[in-house]
Image (cartoon, rainbow, N blue to C red):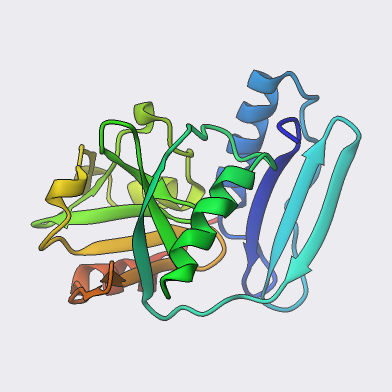
Length: 215
Protein backbone atom coordinates (compact mmCIF):
# COMPACT_ATOMS: atom_id res chain seq x y z
CA UNK A 1 0.00 0.00 0.00
CA UNK A 2 3.00 2.29 -0.13
CA UNK A 3 1.91 3.24 -3.66
CA UNK A 4 -1.50 4.47 -2.42
CA UNK A 5 -1.42 8.16 -1.56
CA UNK A 6 -3.95 9.63 0.85
CA UNK A 7 -5.31 13.14 1.21
CA UNK A 8 -7.82 14.03 3.91
CA UNK A 9 -9.64 17.17 2.79
CA UNK A 10 -12.02 19.37 4.76
CA UNK A 11 -15.04 20.88 3.04
CA UNK A 12 -16.44 24.00 4.71
CA UNK A 13 -19.31 26.06 3.30
CA UNK A 14 -19.07 24.10 0.06
CA UNK A 15 -15.35 24.69 -0.61
CA UNK A 16 -12.03 23.04 0.25
CA UNK A 17 -10.01 26.01 1.60
CA UNK A 18 -6.73 24.11 1.83
CA UNK A 19 -6.99 22.36 -1.54
CA UNK A 20 -3.95 24.07 -3.16
CA UNK A 21 -1.77 22.74 -0.33
CA UNK A 22 -3.24 19.23 -0.73
CA UNK A 23 -2.73 19.39 -4.48
CA UNK A 24 0.91 20.40 -4.10
CA UNK A 25 1.66 17.56 -1.66
CA UNK A 26 -0.19 14.99 -3.74
CA UNK A 27 1.60 16.02 -6.94
CA UNK A 28 5.01 16.17 -5.24
CA UNK A 29 4.60 12.71 -3.69
CA UNK A 30 3.33 11.24 -6.98
CA UNK A 31 6.41 12.54 -8.78
CA UNK A 32 8.80 11.14 -6.16
CA UNK A 33 7.04 7.76 -5.92
CA UNK A 34 6.67 7.31 -9.69
CA UNK A 35 2.87 7.57 -9.84
CA UNK A 36 1.01 9.35 -12.63
CA UNK A 37 0.27 12.96 -11.89
CA UNK A 38 -3.18 13.43 -10.32
CA UNK A 39 -5.62 15.30 -12.51
CA UNK A 40 -8.83 16.28 -10.77
CA UNK A 41 -10.50 19.51 -9.73
CA UNK A 42 -10.89 20.80 -6.22
CA UNK A 43 -13.76 19.06 -4.43
CA UNK A 44 -16.67 21.37 -3.67
CA UNK A 45 -20.33 21.55 -2.69
CA UNK A 46 -22.41 19.81 -0.11
CA UNK A 47 -22.41 19.85 3.65
CA UNK A 48 -19.42 20.44 5.90
CA UNK A 49 -17.53 17.13 5.95
CA UNK A 50 -14.19 15.39 5.49
CA UNK A 51 -13.22 13.69 2.25
CA UNK A 52 -10.62 10.92 2.10
CA UNK A 53 -8.96 10.64 -1.31
CA UNK A 54 -6.99 7.46 -2.02
CA UNK A 55 -4.92 7.93 -5.16
CA UNK A 56 -3.19 5.11 -7.05
CA UNK A 57 -1.95 4.50 -10.57
CA UNK A 58 -5.49 3.33 -11.37
CA UNK A 59 -7.23 6.51 -10.27
CA UNK A 60 -8.83 7.98 -7.17
CA UNK A 61 -11.32 6.62 -4.65
CA UNK A 62 -13.17 9.23 -2.58
CA UNK A 63 -15.06 8.51 0.63
CA UNK A 64 -16.69 10.84 3.16
CA UNK A 65 -17.04 11.11 6.92
CA UNK A 66 -18.29 13.58 9.48
CA UNK A 67 -16.02 16.16 11.07
CA UNK A 68 -14.69 15.08 14.47
CA UNK A 69 -14.57 16.98 17.75
CA UNK A 70 -12.61 20.20 18.03
CA UNK A 71 -12.15 19.94 21.80
CA UNK A 72 -8.58 19.82 23.19
CA UNK A 73 -6.97 16.42 22.79
CA UNK A 74 -4.93 14.18 25.08
CA UNK A 75 -1.64 12.68 23.93
CA UNK A 76 0.51 9.89 25.35
CA UNK A 77 4.19 9.47 24.56
CA UNK A 78 4.88 6.22 22.72
CA UNK A 79 7.87 3.95 23.37
CA UNK A 80 7.81 2.83 19.73
CA UNK A 81 10.30 4.76 17.57
CA UNK A 82 9.12 6.76 14.59
CA UNK A 83 10.03 4.96 11.34
CA UNK A 84 9.90 7.90 8.94
CA UNK A 85 6.75 8.94 7.08
CA UNK A 86 7.64 11.60 4.47
CA UNK A 87 4.67 10.79 2.20
CA UNK A 88 1.07 10.27 3.28
CA UNK A 89 0.48 6.73 2.08
CA UNK A 90 -1.78 3.86 3.10
CA UNK A 91 1.21 1.99 4.60
CA UNK A 92 0.17 3.10 8.09
CA UNK A 93 -0.08 -0.13 10.10
CA UNK A 94 2.83 0.84 12.37
CA UNK A 95 1.28 4.25 13.00
CA UNK A 96 -2.11 2.76 13.85
CA UNK A 97 -0.42 0.29 16.21
CA UNK A 98 1.27 3.19 18.02
CA UNK A 99 -2.03 5.08 18.20
CA UNK A 100 -3.71 2.05 19.75
CA UNK A 101 -1.15 2.03 22.57
CA UNK A 102 -1.91 5.69 23.26
CA UNK A 103 -5.66 5.11 23.26
CA UNK A 104 -5.20 2.20 25.63
CA UNK A 105 -4.05 4.74 28.25
CA UNK A 106 -7.10 6.96 27.65
CA UNK A 107 -5.36 9.37 25.28
CA UNK A 108 -6.61 10.35 21.83
CA UNK A 109 -3.31 9.72 20.06
CA UNK A 110 0.32 8.76 20.58
CA UNK A 111 3.28 11.14 20.37
CA UNK A 112 6.21 9.62 18.48
CA UNK A 113 9.96 10.21 18.78
CA UNK A 114 12.94 9.02 16.78
CA UNK A 115 15.63 6.67 18.13
CA UNK A 116 17.48 9.66 19.62
CA UNK A 117 14.41 10.77 21.57
CA UNK A 118 13.56 13.74 19.34
CA UNK A 119 9.89 14.63 18.88
CA UNK A 120 8.57 13.93 15.35
CA UNK A 121 4.74 13.97 15.32
CA UNK A 122 1.62 12.20 16.55
CA UNK A 123 0.14 9.44 14.41
CA UNK A 124 -2.68 11.64 13.07
CA UNK A 125 -1.50 15.14 13.96
CA UNK A 126 1.39 17.48 13.42
CA UNK A 127 2.37 18.69 16.87
CA UNK A 128 4.00 22.02 17.66
CA UNK A 129 4.84 23.95 20.81
CA UNK A 130 5.17 27.56 21.85
CA UNK A 131 8.50 29.19 22.66
CA UNK A 132 7.31 32.60 23.78
CA UNK A 133 5.50 34.03 20.76
CA UNK A 134 7.14 31.61 18.32
CA UNK A 135 5.44 28.41 17.20
CA UNK A 136 7.94 25.57 16.79
CA UNK A 137 7.69 22.31 14.87
CA UNK A 138 10.16 19.42 14.59
CA UNK A 139 12.47 19.64 11.55
CA UNK A 140 10.96 17.83 8.55
CA UNK A 141 14.43 16.42 7.95
CA UNK A 142 13.82 14.09 10.90
CA UNK A 143 11.32 12.15 8.77
CA UNK A 144 7.89 13.45 9.71
CA UNK A 145 5.02 14.03 7.31
CA UNK A 146 4.87 17.22 5.25
CA UNK A 147 1.65 18.20 6.99
CA UNK A 148 -0.86 20.34 5.09
CA UNK A 149 -2.03 21.89 8.37
CA UNK A 150 1.53 22.72 9.38
CA UNK A 151 2.07 24.32 5.95
CA UNK A 152 -1.06 26.39 6.48
CA UNK A 153 0.17 27.63 9.87
CA UNK A 154 3.54 28.52 8.38
CA UNK A 155 1.72 30.42 5.63
CA UNK A 156 -0.29 32.33 8.24
CA UNK A 157 2.70 33.49 10.28
CA UNK A 158 5.89 33.10 8.29
CA UNK A 159 8.01 35.08 10.72
CA UNK A 160 6.52 33.38 13.78
CA UNK A 161 7.07 29.69 12.91
CA UNK A 162 10.40 27.89 13.03
CA UNK A 163 11.83 24.39 13.13
CA UNK A 164 13.41 23.26 16.40
CA UNK A 165 14.39 20.04 18.14
CA UNK A 166 12.52 18.98 21.28
CA UNK A 167 13.44 15.82 23.18
CA UNK A 168 11.45 13.65 25.56
CA UNK A 169 13.28 15.24 28.49
CA UNK A 170 12.19 18.72 27.43
CA UNK A 171 8.41 18.17 27.23
CA UNK A 172 7.56 19.53 30.66
CA UNK A 173 6.14 23.05 30.97
CA UNK A 174 5.54 23.36 27.24
CA UNK A 175 2.28 24.49 25.66
CA UNK A 176 1.44 22.27 22.68
CA UNK A 177 -0.96 22.41 19.77
CA UNK A 178 -2.02 19.69 17.35
CA UNK A 179 -3.15 20.31 13.80
CA UNK A 180 -4.39 18.39 10.80
CA UNK A 181 -6.28 19.15 7.61
CA UNK A 182 -9.51 17.53 8.81
CA UNK A 183 -10.07 19.21 12.17
CA UNK A 184 -7.81 22.25 12.03
CA UNK A 185 -5.91 23.51 15.08
CA UNK A 186 -6.59 22.06 18.53
CA UNK A 187 -4.98 22.58 21.90
CA UNK A 188 -3.24 19.65 23.53
CA UNK A 189 -5.00 19.62 26.89
CA UNK A 190 -3.21 16.67 28.43
CA UNK A 191 0.10 14.86 27.95
CA UNK A 192 0.75 11.55 29.69
CA UNK A 193 -2.03 12.30 32.13
CA UNK A 194 -0.78 15.78 33.05
CA UNK A 195 -3.02 18.76 32.32
CA UNK A 196 -1.60 21.46 30.05
CA UNK A 197 -2.87 25.03 30.17
CA UNK A 198 -4.37 26.27 26.91
CA UNK A 199 -2.32 28.95 25.18
CA UNK A 200 -4.44 31.87 23.85
CA UNK A 201 -2.21 31.99 20.76
CA UNK A 202 -3.44 28.52 19.83
CA UNK A 203 -7.05 29.69 20.07
CA UNK A 204 -6.27 32.68 17.86
CA UNK A 205 -4.70 30.46 15.19
CA UNK A 206 -7.63 28.05 15.31
CA UNK A 207 -10.04 30.91 14.65
CA UNK A 208 -8.18 32.02 11.51
CA UNK A 209 -7.05 28.64 10.22
CA UNK A 210 -9.74 27.99 7.59
CA UNK A 211 -9.95 31.56 6.27
CA UNK A 212 -7.57 30.97 3.39
CA UNK A 213 -8.12 33.12 0.28
CA UNK A 214 -8.61 31.20 -2.99
CA UNK A 215 -5.44 30.44 -4.99
